[in-house]
Image 1 (cartoon, rainbow, N blue to C red):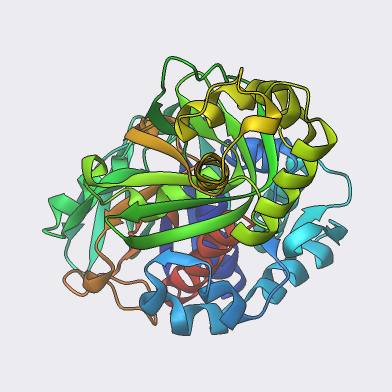
Image 2: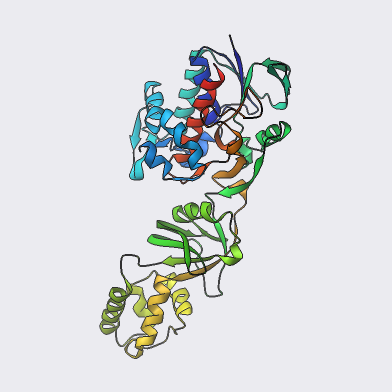
Amino acid sequence: MKHIAVIGAGAAGLMAALAAAQNGARVTLLEKNEKAGKKLYITGKGRCNVTNDTTPEGFLENVVHGRKFLIGAIRRFSPADTMRVLEEGGVPLKVERGGRVFPVSDKASDVTRCLVALCRRAGAEFCFQEEVRSLQKQGEGFLVQTSARALEADAVVVCTGGVSYPATGSTGDGYAFARRFGLSVTPPKAALCGIACAFRPEDDLQGLSLKNVRLSALEGEKVLQSFFGELLFAHFGISGPVTLSLSSFVNERDLSRVALEIDLKPALDDETLDLRILRDLAQEKNKQLGTVLRLLLPQRLIASVLARAGVAAATPAHSLTKEGRRKLVHALKHFSLRPTALRPVEEAIVTAGGVDVRELDPKTMQSKKVAGLYFAGEVIDADALTGGYNLQTAFTTGYIAGKSASF
């Protein structure tokens, strides 16, 4: 019987252990934490957005890095397969806005408990609080030195995660293992994180939440990417769903050359917005512009918009010129922010970068350089947008690595 050592009992490690054990291998799952799935417990704000109810093609559209590498993999273990495993394991699921899939209980612990139970039922052995200190090739197999012992394995599946949320145990161990065997590692970067911005003196926006806005990143006149949805102003800059998504597309850019713009009224084109402003001005013609804009904007946003338009808040509504309206429309449709940095990778939802996927076989997740050495999950250079796609990447690559290693 082939002996497989799986390093890391997160989403990828649990699925790898399950696939290998169900395929007849003897599996030892090594986890340095006191329990499995520590990062799983905090995903989806503790509700665990396990996957997205979409097709393989729909999944691939939401992959930011590693899309080509995952084309075949996602067809072999799709979102539907993840849902089937969990539901057959006793976790009823529900589909929410945007195809996001959650356990009906809204408890991430139910997902972890299910996967652990399935692994144990298949015969996998869990070894908690056992950190892997070194990994060496030994003949056709490997010598795995842990904090407690040395064990031999025919194959090893590395599922140690990235470097985001290090308190969950994701401290970059897998990168060291990869480099030890001569594999290239793309430097880890923050993905799905907040963006620090240089605010203007008039911007008193912390805690303000905006819905149905469009956030865009531009380099010169070129729009790099844009997202529609909810945005939150934080003490450091901006956060919220659209910001998190956008961060994954600018994390390799020189931010000094990137500008951010918020379209505060994306449902209205310039002409329609101008007509709306004209109507408000006529309705409140004896009031000051700063007061009239309460019909259009949250109070706390007015000073910032007017400053960007170069129009005084005390301007009487009846005296606003056509040029003044044009500037106001532009400020509303192109509310400018200057990004200075992404939030630290330790705060990011996922890590971009990792083991270079060009050095892995996409059909098996095995290293092209070292037979019997597999990588899966966040440790590899593949990341996606929010909505369950990153956990699906972990489940998909974990399943394929575990099953492949067991042959």
